[in-house]
Image (tube, rainbow, N blue to C red; front, side):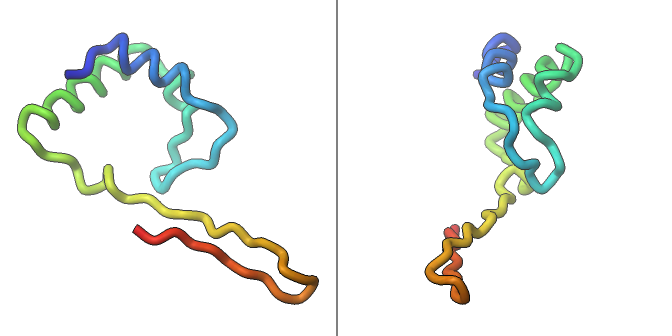
Amino acid sequence: MFDVGLLSNLAMEMGTGKAAGLHGLISEHLKNSHPFIFTILCKLFNQCLMIGWTPPAFSVSYTVPEMLEVDRYQFQIFVESL
């Protein structure tokens, strides 16, 4: 089970300067939000655990391809698949 202190500590340990996800959220949003957000998230995560359900949006992500220069006019793109 999750508790408010655990979620708060995890959020504060998250790195900064990363790109936003599909929903536009970045770690700075959690770090600079009102402390009550961790109470709400705690209730949400615990309810998901109790009923055994995960919102479909929790599993949506994307990978940004990394372009590696092979020579001046040719590039290789590597994309991880799920």
